[in-house]
Structures are given as C-alpha cells and as structure tokens.
Image 1: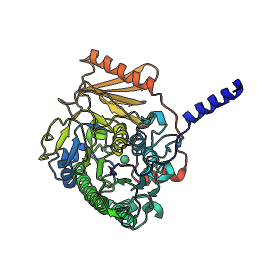
Image 2 (image 1 turned 120 degrees about the horizontal axis):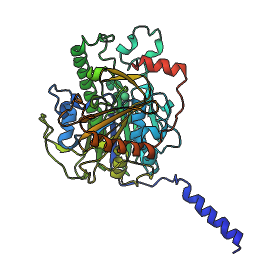
Image 3 (image 1 turned 45 degrees about the horizontal axis):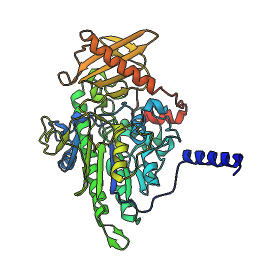
Image 4 (image 1 turned 90 degrees about the vertical axis):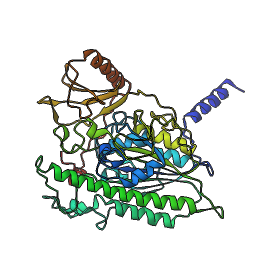
Length: 471
Ligand SMILES: [Zn+2]
C-alpha cells in the first residue's frame, strides 16, 4: 500500500469517527417514555411537595408509585432556555439560548434526536409558542403538534387589554385541548416501535383564570392571584392525569408483532421554572433566580418491573401526606435527558452534562443558575443591573450580579434555615461567599456564554407579549 493511500484511508477513518451514525437500531428493548413539562409550576405550590391546598392530587398519586426528587432546580427561569437545557442537557448560556424567541441551534443534540436514532418513535404536543417547532424544539420529533387553534386557546389570553390582535388565540392552548390531541393521536397510532412522547402544559402561566384576573393590581390582589394560580395548577394536574392514563393504556395494550404486549412505561414530570407571586417584589418569572423562580417539581414513575434505581432517602416530604419514595439530593433539569436515555437503554450523548437520576447521587452537588439578561432588580433596597448568576452548594445559595468592571453585588442565603431567602449572610460569612464565588467563576470560565441569535422579529416579540411575557 502506498503511503499516500494509507494516509487517505487513515483520514477517512478519522472522518468517519466524527460523523454521526444515523442508522436506527431495530426494536430496542426499552419502555415507552412520557415526559411532561408543566410550565411555570413552583414546587412549593404542589401538594405533592407539601403545599396545604390540594393542587396536584394526580402528581401525588404518581409519586406514591415512583420517586420524587425533593430538591430540583431549573437552570434559569425562562421557558425556552430552560426547556433547551432539559433536552440538550447543556447550560443555556453555552447554547446561546437565554430568552424566549432565540432558537435552539441545529447543531445541539437534543434528547428526541438521540431517542429517534436509538429506534424510538418520537412525538411532541406543546401548549405555547416559546417551545414550538419554529424555535428549534421539533429537533428529533417525528410528529410535533404545536397547532394552536381557537377552540383550545385559553379564553383569558384572548382578552388581554390592548391586544387588538385576533391572532392571539393561536399562541397557546389549555391542558385539556393538548391532552385531547394526544389521546386522538394515540388512538390512531399503529407503530411497533417504543414511544418517546413529550407533553407540555402551560395553564399555570400568567394570565391566570379564564375571563378575569388579567389586570391584577399588585400587591392588593396577591391573595386572589394565588388562588387563581393554584386553580391553574389543578387544571394542569387534571391534564396530566388524562395523558398519563391514556399513555399507560396505549403502552399496556398495543399490539406488537401480532401479539399484545406491555414493554413497560416510564413517566417523568417536571417544570421549566416557578413564579414570583409577589416574593422578592416580583410577580412573574425570569427576572431573578430565587427559589420561587427556579425550584421545580421533578418526579419519576415506572410501571412494575422498571428499575428506577438509587437509594431513596425518605418516604415523606416535609408537611406532606405523600407516602411515596423521596430522594433529597440536589438535581437539575440537565439530569432529565441522560436519565431518560438511560432508562431507554440508549447510550448517552457525549455532549450531555447531566447525570442519571436513577444512579447514586452525591449529597452535595453544585447547581448553577442564571437569569436572562435584561433590566434591573432590587437588592437590599437599591437597583442592581447586570448579569445575574448563582450557585447552590454546601446548603447555601450564593448570587452575584456583576455591574460594570469591578462592582459585584453579592447575596448569600442558608436554604434550610431561610427558605424565603430574606436574611443575606454575604457580609457575615465572607469566607464561604468567597469559596462559592470561586465555584461560580470556574463554572463561567468552563462554560462561556455564547451570544445567540437576537430576537428581532416584531411578530415574535408581539406574540410573546400577548402570552404574558410582559416584562
Ligand atoms: Zn415557562
């Protein structure tokens, strides 16, 4: 063999190693998998997490047969970046997706692509514009239902004062409408492959309620808003019950190769962020990364025979009647994609940064948070502008806002003693603040921020405003 030919062959082999193998694997043994994200769902407003009003009866039922992760964080408090982080298992800043309307780059390997490549049929049914296929969320899905029609729209959202647009009703839909689309699709489905389905509900997102509560005067109407928000959670929980039951029925009874078989099923339920509801002086989400904005429910359920792994750390959530299994180690949405790929028996993508939630999890694991970049917020009575990042580690949360070259506004909270994050310890614990600041700056250096595509489409900006992104 000539040296030139040998070199060519070597080059070819090297190139092949960099190519993505798109051949599907025939009939993988994995279970059917359902991922449900309930938009804007604060963990502490779920009865499954100890909230005294019964907002999530079905989630509690599911938890009794599954594993509930007591301490789960979304990496940011904005819909699109948070969902992008979930599907790509990467930090939003590294993808250049820091606000709604910024598309997920085509080069990101999303969970649905991995599942599809591993032999799964993939389908998604979403309920609002920021996670629609036009922003890259369709990557890897064979079927993507983001067809928002007038019939399924939230009536309240069509009546936003000053709307003037009759198209507003085409921007979202209620949980019952999304669930109905999913049920109808399942009824028609005749496919021997295992299914990976994503359902997204948006009911708890502002504006709450159907015909009223659009222009709440804060803070006078906080009580009214809380009740309306809670009733929207209950509505989403009903939607969850509908889709999980339909999914289980489908999974247990469908025919495979002429025989009826149940290959087992897995359900993972979580949220993309919480909601301010007046805490820290903020009504909605996106502006900060306090607990009310980023602590989310996360629950994994498996049919009998599915090994959800791990050592559970308790069987009750504080203050809750729940008698399910609880794991209290810190986890994030970046852990979702590796977990579901693992349960499907599909090798994880090298780009995934998260861990499998079914495995051993350390008691202390640094969780990083970042808000989208805009406007200012109030810290200790003064206006602070600039990027805000935070880290949760060693039982504390450390937040830093960098404004200008040298000026850093720090905050430090002990999360167990001060869950409302009201008692700033940064001045009294300078050593701990410094250690956590170093963790945060190491993370920022390791995952530098990528400037994403600017949101300049006037129609998109207007549509996002109509959906309640009213910052
Ligand atoms: Zn959201």
